[in-house]
Length: 214
Ligand code: SAM
Image 1 (tube, rainbow, N blue to C red):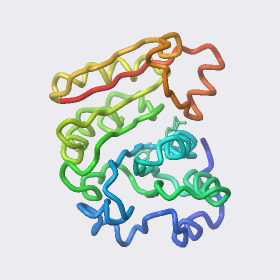
Image 2: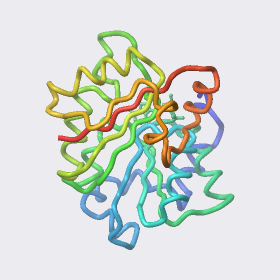
Image 3: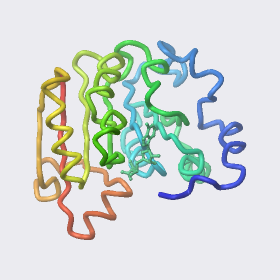
Image 4: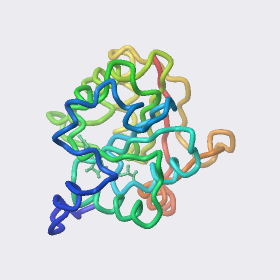
């Protein structure tokens, strides 16, 4: 995913009707149902990359509102291009660093959070940048409703082990943990593959997944 410097991507994003503009993000907490114009649940993917997973989820579940969050303009551009081919009314994008996620969604405004193949940040001193770290779990705790769940998939065993170890100190519990998602027919029901999931599972890597709650 090295698409960070596509010329003009920032301009395209600034003008795209599918992206919530950076200038208005601070006004968004508590208004997401108004933004979508319906009371449907709000599910978000943090670090969506080119958006294949969230686009296909939005297509499969028209009664759920989806928000895809991506740090890099040039990657987000790919998701915008997909929406230009076939627009989905229940999908919006945000270009931002998810460190500020609790400034963009209100308390308990989100019903589900997805993390897929998050960057591993292998150095210990970067652990707090990992999207399933306790620092990020504390941010998700604010925006996720009480009964809400967070789902995380990865093929990176070190990152997955780290994520599982973070649960208890952060006050979360596992509802589901699997070390081979693709061999579990029940957990595979309704599974939508991400770009990375397609790539790494086709190389024979097992896919790890948890579903957590507090
Ligand atoms: N979720 C996609 C998938 O499974 O195919 C993309 C996985 S890719 C390895 C991770 C993505 O997360 C990258 O596009 C990266 O820019 C984005 N990302 C990483 N840290 C982020 C952060 N703090 N805020 C927003 N996006 C982030």
